[in-house]
Length: 414
Image 1 (cartoon, rainbow, N blue to C red):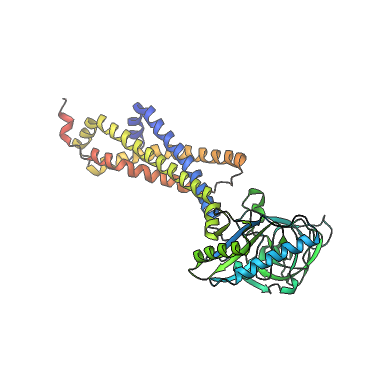
Image 2: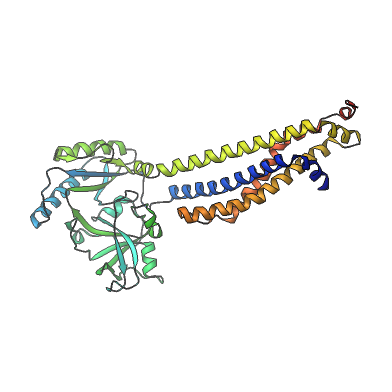
């Protein structure tokens, strides 16, 4: 079919054609970028932490009767209170393992520093998060050890939270090992943590940092396990529950700790919580954003499809006599159907071409305003194809109605 008859038929309806094409263009621009944002949010939500999340419980508590000060006696008393808690928790029947754990992936509280191969702070460095704990931390979190060994009990130290003592041995994540030693061989090597030497005795496959903030996105899996208990008025523990006993462990742990020392603060909202709840809370905003964007896309697509159906139905009503004449001259029903489908394809094609430019421009604005990544070409191309298919689906019903107009309609007003 030639393009000239389509252009001639659309010329009296320039306003309607322009509005539908603009609607398609705006829908394409918004849906492409919204879908891209949804994809990014889902990738963010689903990315692994490196820990075995099932059965993992975190306890965060604060002693109300803790000694005040950072003198040696106060630090020793605080450490004794922490070791008592660990012994009590480890003796619970439904607990497989327990460890001192100052922070945890997704938990937010973070200690971080810079790793170098030489003591000079001006040397090329790798930023990493520090996980302070004891010899059971790696196994309690369920981290996969790919090389080396765990800490031994004799390597565990303790200091005040504001102390400066460093660790002589560390376990690093694979990304840290690769960044410091691109050619391999990190195990057994000496690195410097903020200028202090430490030997790598183990490497774990993956361990996400505690923060999800934008400033930490460039080193999300740069983590270091430190054989160090941090002593302060607050202390945190990681528990590994037996299969299916997670809720029981949470109840037992709270009762056991309060029995040892009732002068402690453990709110229901964050005092004792499974890791699954931590993940749900942290990514609640991302899930909400994805659902909102999905709803917006669905509404826009439905409105655009309804606009195409309504305008095409209006045109069919206006052209009934013209359609009847064509049928009287020998046009088949399939010819009428194809005509309206090609007409819609032409309009949708103009809208998609304009939408391509708007989608790219909208993405550039989001990149500069909200630091969004560049929109992949595949999203725009897929969006164009989707809009063309949506137009064809929307126009099918009114086009089929037009194809059923009988030839006798051509003579009714003669």
